[in-house]
Amino acid sequence: MAAEVRALYAADPTSQNRDGRLEIEPDSIVFTALVRDGEEAIGHIALRRLGDDLEIKRMYVVPARRGGTVADELLAVVEQEARRLGAPRLILHTGDRQSAAMAFYQRHGYTPIDVYAPYEQLAYSLCFEKVLR
Image (cartoon, rainbow, N blue to C red):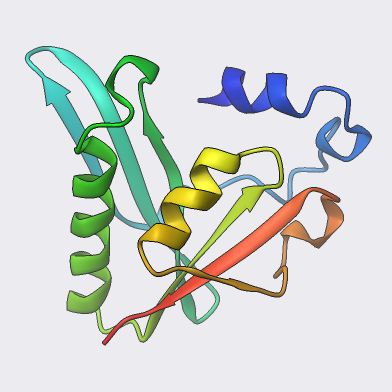
C-alpha cells in the first residue's frame, strides 16, 4: 500500500519529509481486520480513534483481488464494529489521485467533508464521512 501511494504522490512536495504528525499511534487502533486466501493476505482495514471520531485507516486490497467483494466485506465489517462501539459516524482521509477509492467510498454512502487535522498540511487531501444509523 505504501509503495502504491508513494508512487501516486511522488511529485507532490507536501507528501515528502513529513514531520511525524501523520504517524498512527498504535494505542489509537481500536479494530483491525485482515482477509486471507489461504496463507496469502489479500486485504486489510483498521479503525482508529482520532479525537472524538473513529477513522478508517489503511484500507487495502491487493491489486489482483480488486473489483471483487473483498473491499466491500472489509468496509462492512469496520462499519459494523464502529456501530458496536457507538460511533455516530465514520471518517476517512484519501487523496485526490485515488479516484477508485473515492468512487468506492461514495458508492458506499460516504460524503465529502472539510479536511480535518492532521491532513490539512497535505494539498491533495480529501476527507469523507458516513453517518451511521
